[in-house]
View 1: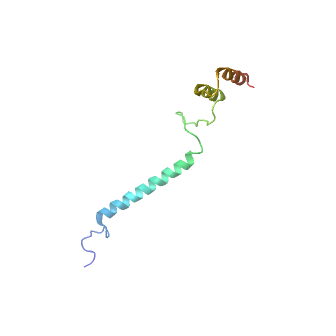
View 2: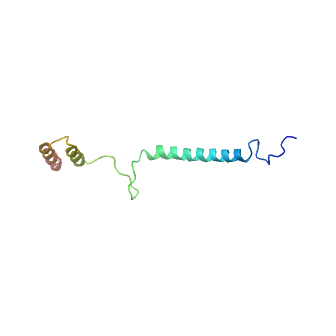
Length: 88
């Protein structure tokens, strides 16, 4: 007779039920991660206090990086630093 011996788990048995649960868990977690990725990407990284950090960098910081990398020499660094500090 048909249907005997499967204990109500359908044609795959207990293994099929575990695979189905695993599939739904992965689907739900994946959906949550995709939603978080697209919604968090517009705010910027979070600081320890919870506020967002501005993506803009300080011009003096950029100047120091360029000097450290050797892109500009000491004279040019000092000239540009004076300009930045004077506000012009």
